Image (cartoon, rainbow, N blue to C red; front, side, top):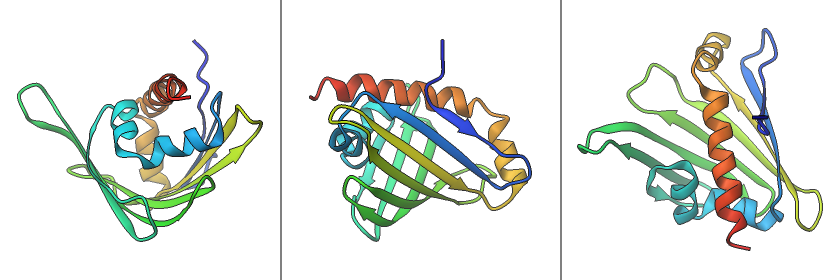
Length: 155
């Protein structure tokens, strides 16, 4: 199956460039990143906090069937411009990965399609390369496919 979310890791750089075109109007794509109920569905995690505003913060947590925390992440939203930009930090707790900086840019292509471009800046090239050894691209594609399916039903 073709992976629609493209992840470009240019050699020698400590960043990733992620692009994806969605069959969704711009407003719905943006909502998928700022409304807790929608984020929970496509990310498959619990949103403990999501303050979608400048200087807001967020916390996500996923537990297994026995209540053990499997994934926990948090960050600060530095800039949010509705339907255009989210600039935020992202930190996976209880891992060796340091905080990363994420620039999300949303673009309208047509009335019914939009594009998301994410630039992630890592502390080092090694940190970026370590993430790329994980099934990151596969997982991101799965999540974005769910986002597409779930949000399309909101039209």
